[in-house]
Length: 241
Image (cartoon, rainbow, N blue to C red):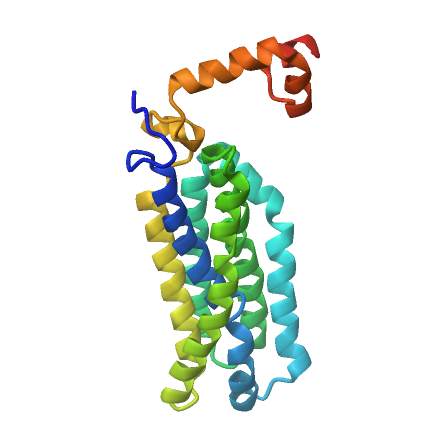
């Protein structure tokens, strides 16, 4: 059994945060913050109105939220790691397809719906689920480090997309291809590096040792009022059944 403190090289949790940061920051930056950069170029070439093209973007955001129950079901059945992988592959396929739609507005709307359904499992809920399993005392710090990456992605991704599109002669398709590549990268990193729970590697949350965990349970036994405040003691849970 691996016994690794949170500050020691043996605890995988801190490395996991870096990988989760990559999985979250890059796709989110390109999928959610990138499209508004592409829309003016699409409007100029395809002749759609601003309202028409923003309808698709609104649908994308709406479906990302409505897909939350589906995401939760996938995490329960498949685990967060595979959920991230499937969502990333789905997002990559949808964004790549958006670069090939031509002037079909119907295809654009359908792909925005599908992208919204795929983007949810590719990022938010699975990322937070993994962090909750891996960190207890350091949970707030871990969530802040990873989710703060969204702001970084949101700052850099649109600038990279704009530079690439302008450099390609205002070809907006390049931007969707970049989003597809970023989603594929996120999916690959997720499936290769993410571990759903510390127990998958024989570790405990925060890198605690079995002795640390046993000591905490003993302390909660000795101070049941603290256990009630934390709401996590197994014996108290059995008593409340």
